Image (tube, rainbow, N blue to C red; front, top):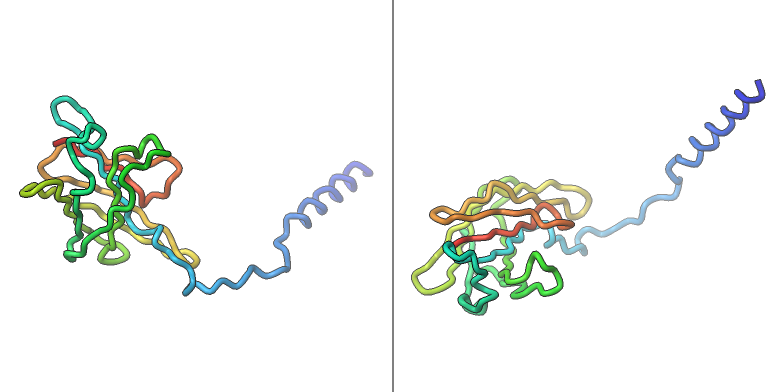
Length: 166
């Protein structure tokens, strides 16, 4: 009987300690929170289709001349020209897009030299949660090019590496 009473007492103590605190969560003004991190971020890498050499690392492509814009003809800012601290992102040009809506098909255009425009199509889904929510980039397609789309380890689902063979 003492064992049952003792086991019940331990269970009650554990249950009581797991109860949510009566203290309220801090009141955050969502209008002051910058949620740009939920937008689609594409880390674009270019490779030679014959030799598989990295065209940015070998200076065949000058990242300062790479330009990108979205389906709304809005120029996209190149966020990072060589993410040297993260091996999988070296030799990338990085663009954040401004999608058309919460659950949409989108297109990004990338010009690496005069007369050469690459179209990148993708689906974007935004899920509201708290102030910012989360984004998901999926179904990436680069018409006319061999490519691979790779999630980035330890990054949110709205960040993708797109390796394009030219």
